[in-house]
Figure 1: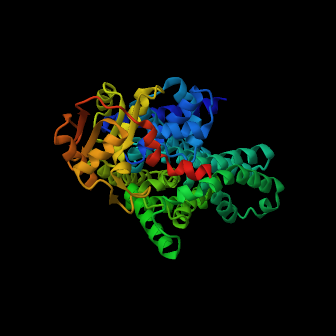
Figure 2: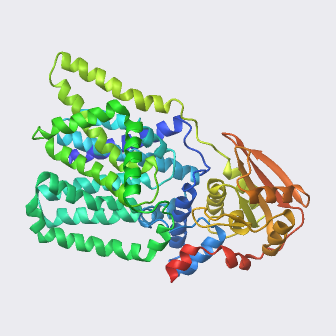
Figure 3: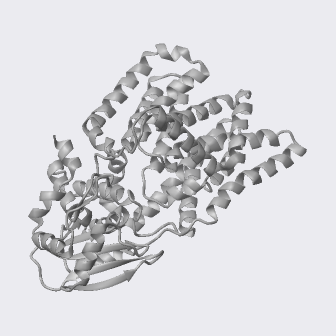
Length: 525
């Protein structure tokens, strides 16, 4: 019991330290300007609102919700993490700022995996120090500044790996079922969580646990896990595959492997990489450390292999599941060098300082997160409730839509139509862009048809987001609108709020003509 209390206490401290660090570096704002942040927030708020509404017909509720807040994107992302948070969101109804703070806290929780690894090798105090040191990883800090799914994926994959080692060392139904539950939940948090399925195969190979391949419990749990995960991905694969930016194959595999390996080097530095390799080599020869080292290698290889096989995208944050398992052997190297005493202790101290240089130098130029003050913008929209056309990059549009969903609190007094859907056309990833409204007159006809109360134009870095953005800006500046410009609260940019000078009758029934989510239609079919 004392061990669990100590571990939970350490996890809380790590989460709070992550939050404080993100806040101190200007990474916590009330505006979700990241391209995916608002979608994750709206997805969670949708499930919370659905619970508060008494669990009505999900597809009908989703269609109506999408018409109001067209960032709903369950289908492109699985519902696991949203479903876990939804009851709390339903009770508390957190603002985007509060959700960002919670996400920063969660970003610190994977550091507890480092604590487990070093405690398992007999060095809990070193593990605690290494866990706090991991908070300085640029990837960890960047993840703490965004409301994304990569932090919980890293945590669940890590917990699943630990559950696998426990089951492999002392097989039993309870331990296999715990691993199976975590292995099922990981890909339901985010697709790359499926990398956990590679960990047992790699660890069995490294540890030569061939007897486990004859254990019926392993295969029964594997089948049950597949039955939980497969139906979701059968329904949603066409949707999620729409976000793939590459074609699978040897060319992509090599590109992904080299790019993702470089991301690890950029995050930990060459000194950190050398220390990690040394820790793996020395730890492999240490009987107490060997199981942890093998598991670390399994998770790192699984992460790199999965990202090389599935051609979603190349982004350094996809390496987050591997970071705790890279930090473990780095800390193990320092411990083993320290053990030699005398000059070894001096060398360990110098190596620790050298390993920290690259991450710290990366953090120094990190700029505060941009903030468009979305709460104040949406408050102005609520003074003229109805249909609002929102324009900007994915993050700008999304920040307004997310804040509108929060401030509406289920009342459905605001409709937020996306200018990128009404004045132009493209696919989910923005490919095939083309103008629908070529000039202000054509844009005015579209706005009149749906009955917009006004328009919000987010000009990040004081630039038009798209060609249709310039068309819309010229329309609202040409007369008939009361225009107010709001500078960004942090960073370069402005938000133009244009309220129609005359009362307008909204036609929300026409929004479903063009803006009902393709995701919902696909999943319904």
